Amino acid sequence: LDASTTLPRHFQDYSRTSPLHLGLSRGGRPKVLELLLKAGYAAGKAMPRLSDGRSPLLHLTKLADAQAAGHIASPERRVRLAKLLIAYGADLDMADNKGWTPLHTAAEFGAVDLTSLLIENGARLNLVDKKGLTALHWAAMCARVGGAECIVALVAAGADTSIATNKGVLAEHWAANDAVLLALQGKPL
Image (cartoon, rainbow, N blue to C red):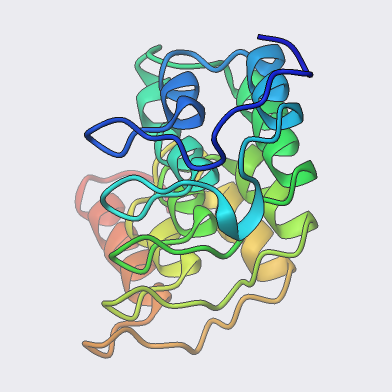
């Protein structure tokens, strides 16, 4: 495979997995991804999607959770891969079947590197998923390592803190729960 190789723009196997998705799942090699993209593999809105609606960029951000267990690329490689996908026209706001965007999942998993990159490249901050949750809700609800940094990045970029979910929950409700838990455990707030 080289840059002159022509590939079908929408090639996917029986499970709708494309070479881009597969390559990202298997540790993500930037040179391989770049060759696929240079060979004309679909970018932007034409990028292939998994059966659950995940674009390659959304797939990469969802794999951020697996990275904590050492299953995929390092955070540095993850950012490099995301930059490649963005450079080739990946839609930053393309949602899956649940309404999740790359920003939702990056924030959910506390991937401040990806969250910041998506914000810098113009991801829409206040998109809601099918349950009415924004990236800020996910960052607050799933505050893991990096969660606080994601919240700071989102708020600094202008995320609307007054958006309530379909059940009327604000991001600050989850923050309050965390403070109560810390207080109950006798830990400093």
